[in-house]
Image (cartoon, rainbow, N blue to C red; front, side, top):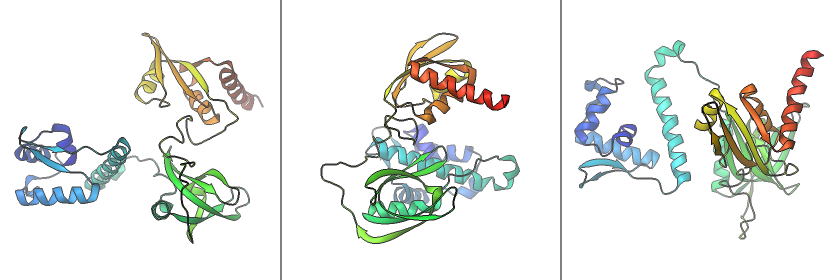
Length: 294
């Protein structure tokens, strides 16, 4: 219902019913559309997703009220994206052998505890699993926000013992409990803001020893098209475009995860500047060759 209204708005009640029936996921007899069920479902949509459907007398059709901010809209899009996939998989569960899925994001089981702690300003105690020793270390933290990156969840929080901001992969957390203490964010806003914290970085690796600079690179063929459709960074701009290649520019801290991302495109991408990043790419490539010569 939401997808259909968003796609065809303004849309009349009769047009909405017809589009949903034509989608092929339901038989008309199963939908049993009526004014009563329509308004009941509209109320449920507003209650569950916060999406408001309204009728505009000027256009004589239904619209969706826009979110208050782009962050809220982004979260709403994710909720609908997840709900849409769950709905399709439920309808076509008997076709499981024809649907290939990636593993779901890691660390999902800890999300509720973390977000509950953020909502109620709770200082939390993390039990972390050491990678090599498998020992469990307990740390008291102030939770700031979470981030999903490359199918993994991360928590940005302040380690109270060391008094530093750290990034914790949720799949390395064994358990989360409340300490019974509360925290207050400083009035001068001297704490990580979710909307800007990673702006100058590619992923979740933050290394202040790596200077922020402008990186220019040339991409060819399919790599150029992919990077145009899915920018590597919010600062990305196109400097030059020809039939054979596109030159891009980004401004960030070129940390190790960004270097690996550039190398992922193989011979379809060439770093033009700065020299320091070109040297990192060359070193990375030589290391791969050395592994095969050993």
